[in-house]
Length: 138
Image (tube, rainbow, N blue to C red; front, side):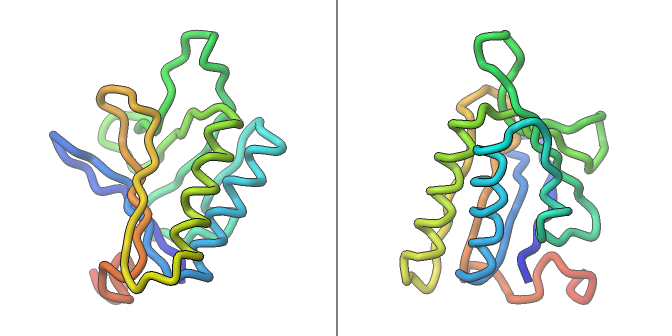
């Protein structure tokens, strides 16, 4: 099962996304879909499971001055807003698909907009227990 959870931290908060190769392609497809249609997209509605985190992508034009990257919608909350331009979504989709199709038993990709303080998205395959981030494990 493709799963995600926000891992808050004072120094390096991340959105951890875990799955097998074929499951990671669900995330790659969602990012690809966003890169084509833009506007808004909720990862939870696209097949990324979470018991505690909601991620909504918002299409953003970097020329407007809006801050890019993944951010908490409200302080202390687990609802996240990922503001990215459509070309970034295509790049991120390719990075996730490359990881999924690499044939490696374990590995990861970090998706970020290089903005100070943003929440990084760590997509991982084979580096965590299979049921990590599920209610059974917690």
